[in-house]
Amino acid sequence: MASPSPFDSASFLDHLADAAESISQVVSDQDVLVNQAHCEFGRLQRVEFEEKMLESSRDAQEARYLHETAEVTIKEQDRVIKELRDSLVESHNLQLAAEALAQGRGVELS
Image (cartoon, rainbow, N blue to C red; front, side, top):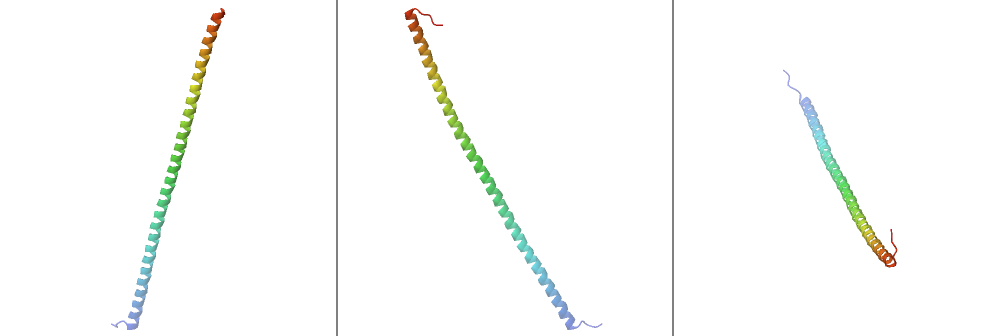
């Protein structure tokens, strides 16, 4: 049986070394891609979180605005109710005064 020539063995070892280097490069490239994917995923999570926080902030601002508007509306309604009460009291007092004046003159008010 003939033993392989040193040239063939060296050539085979060179091919093995080239293949090992190619495999190593593929693994390295995959590591880079995995790291990029992790970074992108993290960035997307941050963006989604920031968007949710912004939306929450907008909702809170809108709620504050609506609350302040409601407070102003309630104060305005209270003011109008007070004016109506005052007007009713004044009207009633005028009616009583008119009745008293009419009775003093002998006139009946309807």
